[in-house]
Length: 249
Image (cartoon, rainbow, N blue to C red; front, side):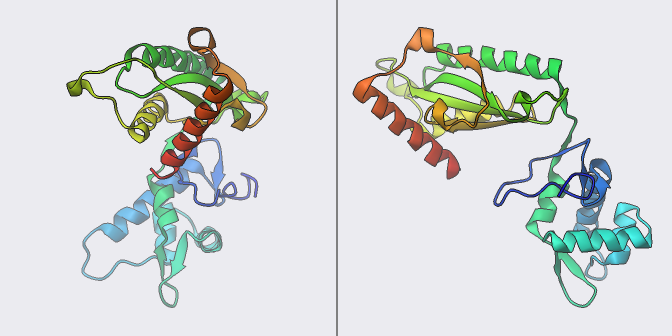
């Protein structure tokens, strides 16, 4: 489904983290849909003499739509599984509806702004490698793929891929013990993610796992070198372990 006719096709199991301000969702522009969904959740969560309900009339009020547009929206939400039947003419929100209502509404980046954020990512990677002694991992590489690699002047998402390598910093004091492997990986991913609401970070075993085309944002090769032989196999194992730990977050 294209943006002009409704929401982009959902990714199974993917959490809705953001709505893009220049797109349409279920036939409405992003802000109209987001604001209406927020009003619906607020209304049905508020104390009331009678149990609150969602029907075509209340949808029209929440989303500021006329009768015809309210029916169109209701059918779209039912078809997409955002509303579930709760008796004749009544409906309740599915968890997916709540994700859309609580998602961030963001404006796509210009190319210049995207490049500024990537420079910040490079600087952060250098600081992590130099200063995060308690973290078990170094950032071996940061790569970017997805919409940034297109020719579009607006970038809706910065899809970053981190190749992590085991840190070998020698002994640590008991009161400054290193983090566990899972906590170390999550700490790095969360810190990079926090740089912008448009960043999506994934940790992978090596650059071969990154969808092409991609570009290298940061490369610590000169400082840390490429593992070889059996060390490379252990590195791939660590990377696979990182991916499994993050998927269980």
